Length: 363
Image 1 (cartoon, one colour):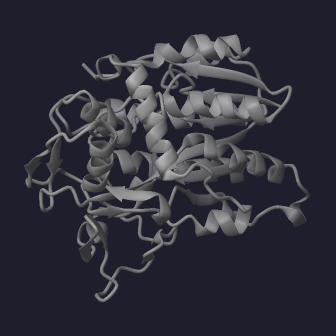
Image 2 (tube, rainbow, N blue to C red):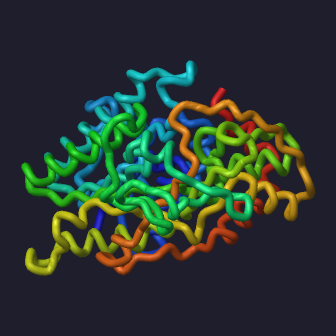
């Protein structure tokens, strides 16, 4: 089997590459990366040492794909992953669309030409912001949780947000590019006869992640706390009660291998089309608030004060936990790395790499 991973030198792409190589003897891996993400160069040497053939190219440029060899599968891990992209005054809305949507179109054309299967790593941010932003919540042990005594929207439960939850606008420019990419991928697959799987990921985290406040929040918070740099609870009550779940990207590898195998199975044994979109996340059991994360860091590194700014940011929501029951039912998939193990892994990496925040800073 030969696999192409776009964005292979990013945190998710490189972690998946290493995990797949560990899992599949004889696997051939090809990688494409434009190396514009600060810190991406750090993964090049380790991937080349394992025999990964790397191509320097940009998925926005169709001509950059011409040198790529034919493969069996494409894993699309190249994206601008920030929900604030295009509106933060630092990034271009046009470039966001070019990266996350037009780049996907180019990769789908590549799959069409080479009869390759396509896996899109999508996001929890395809779900409608308005009902999530107004979700009734209560504070429990320093963290928000849905107030089930009130009226919660359809598709939300204490287990998280289900795939059936609304995806109507607004979902942010970032979310819209990913949601449109999902629709196009499914249409391309059905029209041109190649398999497509869409995995909506929650927050992905682990050692070596290039943490920033708008993405990679667990890595950013731990590295910043350790270095005693300023931290701030932003929005809502200004006390850090907002919650996210956490998944190590290596835990995606077993699911991808099952999806690859299902695509070559007889039609009668293949999962239904409804299984082509799955939430893939740590879920409620691997979720925590910023306040709880701070308490963990205080215990690990010593107390560090966090400032408070109740002023909300665009597109922010109080509780974003994905319900991955569908992935469990269809694929027998469960995350394997507990939340505390993910945090400890990040902490150890942070201690060994004192310049990591500066290396991965955007500017």
